[in-house]
View 1: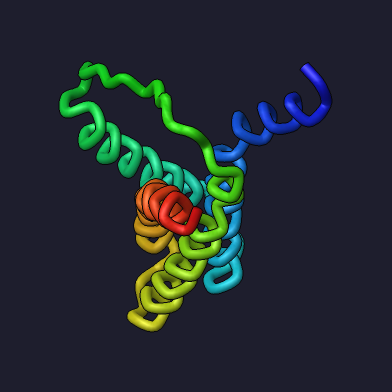
View 2: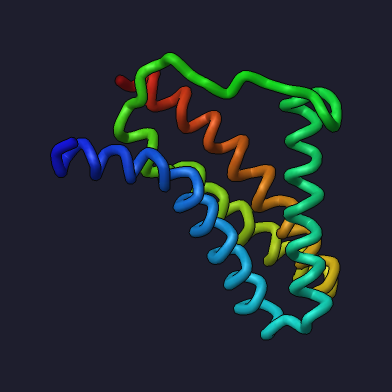
Amino acid sequence: MDANERLATNLVSESEAYGYTLSVWGSGSLLIYVYCVPSAPAVFLFVLGSLLAFTTLAGVAFGRPFGRVDTDSDGELIAASIVHVVATLGNLLLAWGIVGGLDALGVGLAVSALIVGYQVSVAYDILSLLEARMTRWIA
């Protein structure tokens, strides 16, 4: 495998986690910016929100707790689709709006962390699907 092939393989393997990590880190930072450094319970609530979102999405994708789904795709990958601009930046814009709205409503950090933790996981996956379709449409 030459260097370009290896780089392409690495980028494809890392792309979902990379965009998701940026989304989670960014939305958590927005919470910190608006509220303060979170307490341990607020951190756990943020993570709980994300776990609940993954549970929701897994229920949709698999249909039942121990359902199986074929995840192999024979379709071609379009290089631009692995950058996740829409999924990452769109998610952060949404998180920024939600954090600002919750703060304006007087919602505390703990509840906001739970909501944003949930939002960041759901929005990232939905926006990733939209981004993949947009990329195929443009290409």
